[in-house]
Length: 372
Image (cartoon, rainbow, N blue to C red; front, side, top):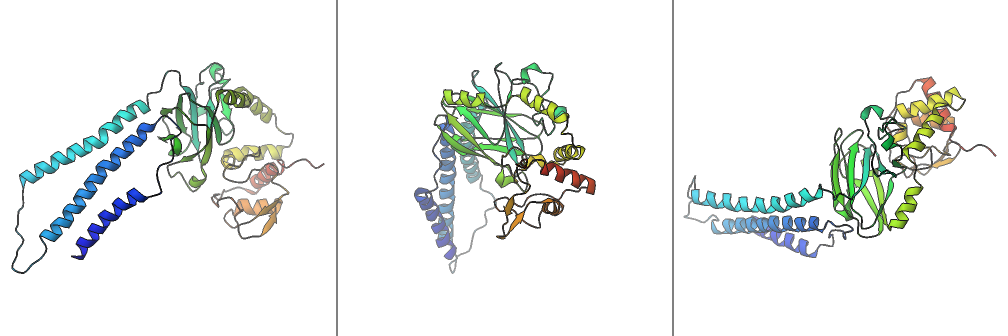
């Protein structure tokens, strides 16, 4: 009898939790209200089955409870019951799948006039690329992917030269304009998800995923990775800002293009005049340091190297330490020994020779402001 009462309480408690829960879905900020409709259809059908099966078990346990003088009958087959169960289950599965398939078919079929936004997932940051003045994105190829060309853009493709490359984890979009999102990954499985848009898609290495949506409400919305992609996964966050067409165009005009990136690459290739610093810059790209540490002041996963050398860092244990050569060497050699406050302790141990360590420290020192 106890299990009967427990099952009944579970059913009633689940219904009450659903009706009284404060955790409702966030307000929509895009055109995909059909996502909510399919979600409610799923809740309704699975809820009906859950309640029906739960109450059926309660009735069975009560009706056929053990009583003196009664023996359970053995019935190995009941074709009538099986047909009913198959029929009801089939109707339920069709009711779950059909609306979702219809919605998904439209979800991956963008309007012809949609703005194209490319999203690149990389441990543990987002990168964005937008169309330039020619209205088309340039070609890309894995053989061109380098630390200073993460999108793998082909320098010989004239369509790529005016592509807008967004620096940082924040991208702006115009309100009430359809946006086609193309997604790629440079390393592992990611998932670009903006909850108020009801828009998300897995990003599988080696292929391009796509969906579209129309932002309908101005605001700044957090984006996140919805697939476990490594130890820095919780920090793989960004922002999508929805604003007027005029504000979007003003923001777009301030962003660098691939042509500017090529110029910066050419300048970097000329070197700084210090072979040790140049070697350190090459090592930072080859060892993947630039995936977590910027040199332009942006915070990615770890502290930016801009102005890092010589400053005081606060540690999670409450202590402070001056970032000097000894600090950098110890931290690079054993990154888990201490944790900088505000940053996750996710830096892996990188095997470096003593000359390589000298070069990397010299490069980090070179990002400090010149003495006045």
